[in-house]
Length: 305
Image 1 (cartoon, rainbow, N blue to C red):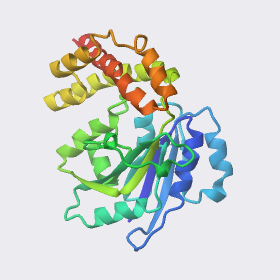
Image 2 (cartoon, one colour):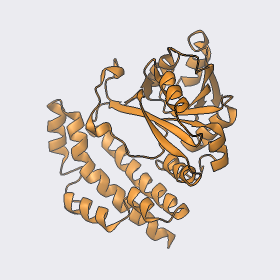
Image 3 (cartoon, one colour):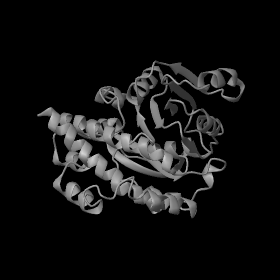
Image 4 (tube, rainbow, N blue to C red):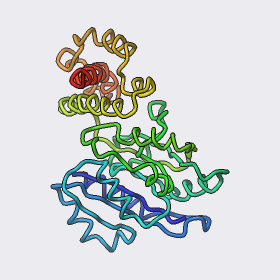
């Protein structure tokens, strides 16, 4: 198998460096992988991403860099697929650090399948440990039931082309990968779990200053969720984007109709962070973040009527 690892990136140089160096450190114990390339698509970064990649070529023999103006992850991934030489595409995000057996694990899982209408999905472990991201243990909150998500997935290029690649109408945060997943499912593709292909998804520890950005992401997710539903008007999609009476009641009750928000919960969040429990603080913040998402999706849907 010849793999093309496609990575869109936007202003993430410090963690991108760890991401790419980990991919250059792959080890193989069989001849399943003939070779691989790392296709990095810079989506209009304003940091020194391009400078570092072009001046560190001796450290990055497998990396091929392409650039575009800032158009979003969907467009960047499409460009990566179009430039890729491999018959197999692996999507990861630029803040993912993989283990040395990552490519080997995906290749073994794909090779052992009894069908060619398959793709493999690896394990994603969330961590805020920048110095040693791969030391994080698996947590129950790391579980994902997504059918197709671009955090750590390997799929034949031909299926992506047949499905039509990512919809570039998804310019804001969320849903472009799951929407493509709906189209892949219609082609009869089967998801095969590959827990041995481990990637560690790094994000900075939660702090109060992140809240405005997180709220904006939830509002954007609501808008893109409505676009998702317009393309695939099914109850399954409504459940995914939280546009049901169940979610409206659930997060309305838990947030006391918005009374528990970023302002009223700020003292508790600060206390938890000061106690060294930023992950718990983030879970508490999800009470109002999900309420923003539900309100956002219904507000966006009303505008479509």
